Amino acid sequence: MRPVWSGAVAFGLVTIPIRVLPATDDHSISFRQIHTADGGRIRYRKVCEIEDRQLDPEEISRAYEASKDQLIPISDQELDDLPLPTAKAIDVAAFVEAERLDPIRFGRPYYLQADGAVAAKPYILLREALQRSDKVAVAKFAWHNRERLGALRVVGDAIVLQVLHWDDEIRSAEGLAPRGVDLSDAEVDEAMELMEAIGGTDLSQYRDEYREAVEAVIRAKAEGIEPAEVETPAEPDGKVVDLMAALRDSVRAARESRGENEGEAEVQEMQPKKKAPGKKTAAKKTSRKKTSAKNTTKRTAS
Image (cartoon, rainbow, N blue to C red; front, side, top):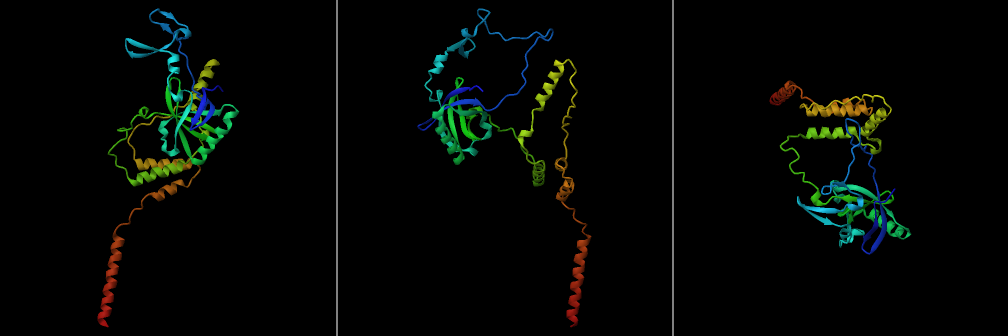
């Protein structure tokens, strides 16, 4: 596995030489563009619009588009010479409790590998300090011509650099949630009952079924056979339903899928019991009155 960056982690006066390795893989299937009529491949060529010719890589540099008619050239050397402490190191600025970091901030993770024998002890030192304190290190670093924010945390025996989004990169969620919705405690309780019935899981059991289906189509066409027909799941009809009934049915289905046949009886027990007609209550009150009258008659006679 090739490192994507080499440098050091710096906190205080401690420096840890490291190599940065991707912590995840992208298994998405890539497609090429072709000419529909004859299957010819569409290629991407870098052509100068002034000279109208294709350029070699060494002829290409970069520029900032200040306006439609103004491009400001920026050289690689000018970017390398920027006075940033994060250009050569992952600079730790703070240590915070892990729960203070909202997961919406998380970007791609990277493994940090100790680079050489001199890095072994400070690497283990930082790892143990993070583990025992239950904290993560907030750091700044500069890769690929931009400065980034990250968090150093422990995964297994390794330190992971989790890229974090800057504040101005996170869009506001204001106005997205519906308002003015009446929701009863019973509906929330039933939803929690459904969560309990569905239960937890091991994430390793899930797989990318879309990618598998695309691969099956590719294999079939490569072998010159017709791809197998796949049953398409029915789309939700979008009709308004009885929410409580849907929740109860979902609880029952979830329990049955887990082999809990008694689930239906348990769900029915949760339904509020209907009160009996008021005749019995009235009868009890009448009998109490009669008993009271008899007792009064006895006391008068005596």
